[in-house]
Structure formats: structure tokens, C-alpha cells
Amino acid sequence: MSANPGKAVVVKIGGSMAEDRKCLEELAADIAKLAATGQRVALVHGGGKDINRNLQWLGQEPKFVDGLRYTNDAAMDMVEMTLSGRVNKLLVRLLIAAGAKPCGISGVDGSLFAATPLRDDGALGQVGKVTDVQTDLVEALWAGGFVPVVSPVSLGPDGNSWNVNADDAAAALASALVAKRLVFVSDVPGVLDADKKRIASLNPTQIEDLIASGVANGGMIPKLRGCAETVAAGVAGVVISGWSGPGSLGQILNGTSGTIIQAAS
Image (cartoon, rainbow, N blue to C red; front, top):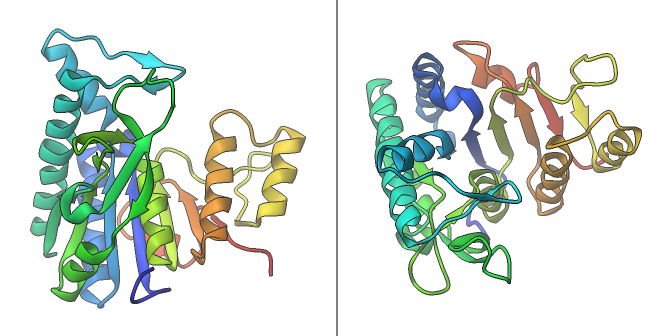
């Protein structure tokens, strides 16, 4: 449990935005402005496309099982080098350029994320799910005025690094911090209704209604249910949003962009 519940903002970037230098620079500027106000903000990232490119560069084809990345020892080395190395330090440099005081870490540092196997049959190799979060390092960084930039690579049950989905890592961190907002920024502008119009807010019951009606389908179903679980864990609101340019993070946090999932009032 966080020592400062209800105060943190956790931002997770994904989709093509993570590949767009201009969008990343805009996000870094927005985070720097937010941090300058004293807001505790952490940035969580993935980097699947970078991992695929680096594996192919080494002559290894990425392997997926039921849509999930298979991660053996060799692949895990590349996952860690890519996520905790190249991608993490790129974001750190952009935040420095924007005037922030970032510190890049992974889920291994400070035992931030402890993971257990995602599947019991071992079919995915070193792919895990977060089962324990120690927020001490993140909160110490905030106390020092830093913006934590978090790679989802986690500490596995064997003491080695394990691969964890970045969305799940961000949700676990927000839940442990009892954050006031968890923000997913990607290619998705928010949750859309049957007429393809943005839905400003949803509660868990309305999410199940959207799923039952078929309006929410495919990959949006586990994402929305995951958001509902995060709200149930104590996070005040989870936002799914796209990016529209400079100032987008402020629009997301004030409710004028994306869809916010909150408990029913």
C-alpha cells in the first residue's frame, strides 16, 4: 500500500505512439509540466516492435503462443536490453530535454515487480504476471523530485528477469499506489459507442453491457475488464485515450479526451 494514496498519476504509452518521435516529445513536455506542479507522475512503457526488430537483426524470428510472446533465455536477454536499455533511456533523454528530472528503472530494481509464470504449463517460457509490487523505490524517487520511467521487466520466481506485459505492469503499479489516475495512451481515441462516438465515462456495469451488446469486442474486452479490476483495486479512475498533440495529457486528465472508467456513483 502506498504511503500517499490517491495522489499519483501513472501513464502508460503504447501502440504506434511509442514509435512516433514527435508524439513522444510532446508527451515528455506534458509530463515535465505536470511534474513541475508537484504532481507525482510515473511513465510506464513497453516496446514490442523494438524487440521484434532487434531479434530479427540477430537472425531470430519472434515466436508467439496464443498471441503472447514466447520468451526463452536468449529472447529474454534481448527483451531486457531493449526495454530496460534502449527504449527506457530514449524516454529518459526526452524528459531531460523537456526539463524534467527523470530516472529510468525496471521492475527488477528495488524489487518493484515480482512475477510468477503467466501459464503453468511453461509454454511461454519466462513470461510472467505481476503478483507483488514494492513501491518504495518509486516513492523515494518522487520524494527526490524525480519522474520514474519504468520498464516492465520483472523479477521472476527463479531470481532472473522475466517478461511482463506493460499494460499489466502499469495497472499493478497504479493499484499498489492507489493512484488517482491510470492513463493508457495509444492509437485508441477512447471507447466508442455503436455510432462510433467517444464515450466520456463508463462504470464496470456499463462495461459489461457494452461487451454483451457486441459494441466492445476483440482486444478491447480484456482491456476494459482489466480497467474495471484496477478501479476495484482502489484506483480512482482509468483513462483510455489517443494523443492529439501538445497539451493532450492535460485534456486527458481533465476529462475532455478519452474515456474514463470509474466506480459507479
